[in-house]
Image (cartoon, rainbow, N blue to C red):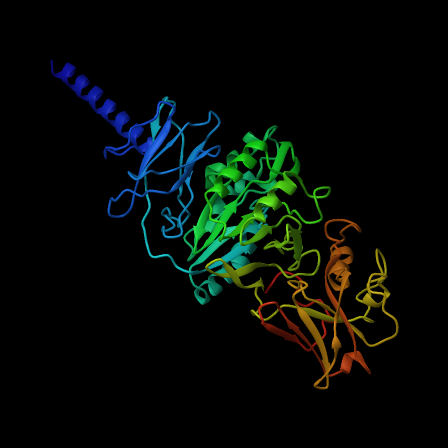
Length: 519
């Protein structure tokens, strides 16, 4: 009899544990809802604030369709058969809810096989802050533990120093977190965990499983670590939408663009956004140069949609160089920021392929306006925004190139006295002036060029291939002419950005110090 009683007790205990586990998985709470569910509803939930007050107007999605919570704080969705998460668009007056590692937690995984499932959420409400800061980090792209150590000791260490300088800082990676190295997922996540800022993540082509034969399978590693591959959140009067624009087909075969269901989701997400907001569209592969080069499916449609908002910016990575590109759409300018990368030229040096230092971007936003932005070079002061060369200097013996700016057909320089400034974050809104002996000589002229100092190092010192990804021509170079001996001239390059920030340089870069691994 005692044996039978023990078996019965064990059976009841196991059943109770299973029931408790199921409730935890679905996120189901015991709080009753006051909304009648539609017959079409297969996914629903209750959303409360920190005072257990229902929250209306919160946008929810299963990644295919969207719906808002009603006056009772209830959302209802017809779950798509391929949906893997239910998630919400974080409102501007909602706290960014995080897990124990300070990672954003705006989603729950869909694991139940039941026909109708419930996932409840809690969002702490707070006063809307009108100022916030985005730290945009492109392509950490670590392939081994040595590169991971550099990412932590260089990039993350630099970010830690700079976070306290700005209000309400949020981190946003722009893809290629790993370099076809799924064994590093846990280590890379840990590197960005428990920091003073929460990191939102974007998926890149190298974040797809290299051996996968479909996009869905290829994304499993990223989803396991970070959740949805497309989602959105608001801060101040700005809407940030993060998308997966890597159309992966098989074994590292991909192109830029959105799948049809991603495009439909984007339209639904932005339909909930007021037209007076600024929209930041974060992705991995750039739009720059048109749909024949990078971004293919829904290229024009996305740009047209973005142009309907007060202001729009595109954030991208992927190329391992820094450039600002302006799309003129429907009478509006859409700024595309193609970011220099944390890894630079794939951790081979401390610079990108165009000579831009390894680093990240800092965007200061107020309401629906971009108040300031700059490129923050890793391990350099904030005002390090350019490098200046004597156009006559030969950086190394001619082999794959003649490594002297004066010989460049793009620059078309004649005579002596020329200097070249590589100003990596420059755009058409920058004014670049050249002074000598305290007097203005001229406005410097924007040109397209290689950085021959950087090109020599990558081509000859590291043995990289001419015409490869290490050999890039970009449009952020400026030329000016001095009188007398350039090497001894008392000069100053004064660059003023579109926000009135003035950056100065008065010395020539003549050697390769600082281009290897930082001491």
